Length: 375
Length: 75
Image (cartoon, rainbow over all chains, first blue to last red):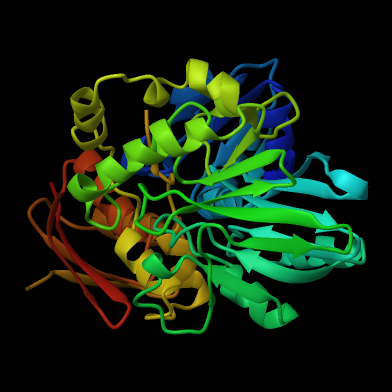
């Protein structure tokens, strides 16, 4: 019948709106098991494209007639081949334009809320990888927190609202994705902030981001208070924005907590992680809305696609915040670690400025889920 | 390693390296070895999985200056 392209953005809308979709993922089994498109109403079947060279008859029965069908592969070539075979067999199907690479790079822009005197806070949801980044806007100025490698979306949005990007922050040295922070700072002449304890090996200039520091965005004074909160990395720093939002970086997520081992120091840092989660955060107002740097499962998304919940709710519902016994907490955190993210050492070195892989290599390094959390 | 046939799949994007490999393999006899050169990084995992699924044996694989080389024995 017909073959049409579906963009990552269109797939993202379906995930957020909980629309039905049937996905035929034709990547090899291990790539599929590692990482796939997930959603409430998404039904998914994995049959590698190389098992279909002789025809698609064997899977025709498994494909529902009353749903949209999307064929997915790593880059798109194989999905087009299989989509054409299905079309020849009488189906109308879509293929994912740009494949899982495009899915990994897609950012969904959601406004989280209003701040004092007309300010706003926006979240950029990287659905395919579970990464979250933020833009705080106030009176013609903008600050960006934990930006992804795909910097255009932040630059374009700031330009569209006439805001000048003045500050860029990384809450910590990332191990799961390549930071766009330095690039944005270079392009906009913004100040780039990094926690100095995570930055001992970095090869470029930055401003040391330390607890107790307050940075003002715009004339209307949206204050960003840095709060030293080690545990995922030794330098990890949280932010309180406008006395309303708590940006927790990779320390605390909605339904999970950060892992302490990606810089090789699980045993040393688990104590810091506990202190941050069980002491430092308890001293804060529990009316604060938690805005993390990741989500792990699709259930952590709100109705509008944002990822945000009051700290009070997390104290009640997040398992990682409710382990009274310290030894049990230690066991949970160090004994239960998921596999490390793809190429995490190389990603750290890239974020330190030690290596400079080309764009294609950077894309390859970021393939797969983020795996920064423990649940 | 000695091979009966050489397939040059350099510069080809997925799915072509595996499509060509399958065609070349169809022309070999059981026990003969096909050597494949490819540049698509994805072909590493896919050729491994394809060989296994088809009952072939991936004898060896190397990577030099961005060129992936595979030796597959027909099963």
